[in-house]
Image (cartoon, rainbow over all chains, first blue to last red; front, side, top):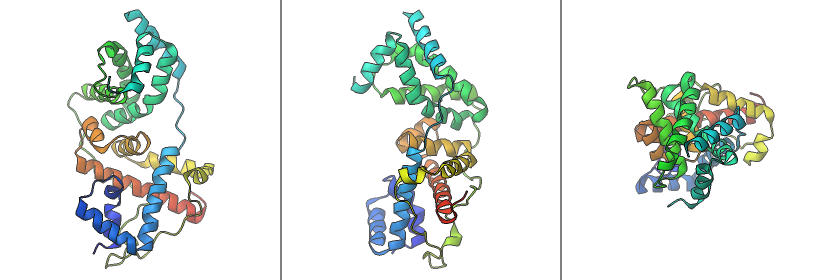
Length: 77
Length: 203
């Protein structure tokens, strides 16, 4: 049976679908019985979602760059 | 073309439409920067991205749509970065710099592998609610800034840009097992930051 520590070590691979079938089943069996690890995985997913939604840095000089690239392209034609 | 959503944009790019280039840069420059960062480091990343954009425009007519526009752009960026590096590739730094709030390390577990210090329930359970706190956003930026260039890039490409692990390996020429290690350690540092903030209310 997988320990909590091993579950944490496998957690990213679990979330990324990188585990073998056997490992995946072991993780699922552990999660079915362990509230604390369920919470950990839930919070890992939440951390991923937070990163996804973290506002992006605005792109410096976006308009100038777009104008330059469009101009370059038109000159090629 | 296999990627229909790209073909409309491509037609506008070929026509030299400025708004189309604006869309292209706004959508993809973040991921391109992450790729450049991982390969040449922060000092030269911006220049590589600029050069990559010029190469994109030069080669636009040759884009066949056999890959998505995104993959094509990122491949050009990676190639531009590698040319610049002229085979002076740095060692892959697997061992990482400590995050400001640590990680989920061995000290959290008892000798038998059970949790000693299990995570508490967080006050917020949606990303929107968590991100309403300006201080938490800044705190996360700090943690992201503490990652090595390669590790930060891997995390960004996976979590924010939604790349598959094998795409990341190909672009950065890092093995799958190294990408997995880098990603896992980065995620635990982000986790530790969120946990710290949820428990203490400060960074």
